[in-house]
Image (cartoon, rainbow, N blue to C red; front, side):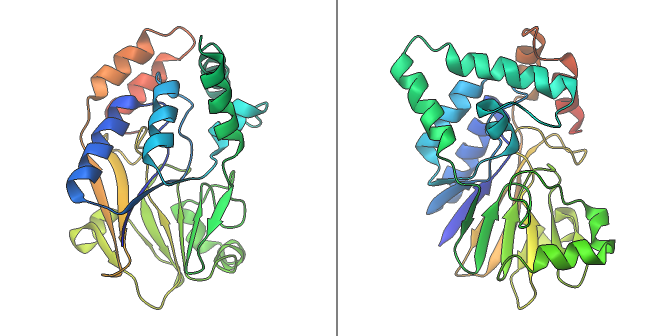
Length: 252
C-alpha cells in the first residue's frame, strides 16, 4: 500500500493544491494528514474543506486545536492569525456547513496507532504540542522517552523540518538520503514529514512523504507552488502579519 502523508498546511491553498496534484500523479491508496490544516494562512476554510474531502485520516494539530479552544503559548502574530482564522470559520453564511466544520475539527483524533505505525502531530509523547528538533538526538532521556511510546515507526510534523530520527541517535535530512528515500529496517524511527504550507528548512517548496508498505520505504517529495500568490493574499489581510507571507519565500 502506498500512503501519502502530509502535514502543516496552515491555510495555504496554493501549496495544498500543488501537493495533491503531485500525489495524484504518483498514485497512492490513501492520504493521511498530520494536522495544522489551518492557522497562519489566508485560506483556512478552503483548506479544511479540501482536506476533509481528500484525506482518509486527519490528526488534530495545535493550530486546529487553538481554533476550537483558546490558544496557549502562541506568540502575538500566531495568536492574531488564529483569531482571524476562527472568524473565517464562524462567518460562513451557510450555518449548517459552518457547524459541520466545527464538528469535524472537534472530532479529529490526537493520535492514530496502527501497531507498527503511529501517526501524531507533535510527538509520540505529546501528540499535539511537543516539538522534536534535530538537536534532541543528544538528549538521551528525551529520546528514550519518545522511542518507548511507539512500536516501530512514528510519523509526525509540527516543526516543519523534515527528516528521520533513528534509534541509534542519528538525524538524517532528506537531502542526505539516496533518492530522498529511507529504507525501513529493524531500527525504530521517527519521521518528520515536513510542511506543505510553510516549510522552514530554507527550501520554499512544499514537502510530504510517501510510505510504501510493500517496498518498505519512506520517500520525501518536494513540490513547487505559487508562493508569491499566497504571499500576496496574506499581504491583503490586515490581521495576518506580512512576515507570514515573507517567510514563505525563503522557506523559513
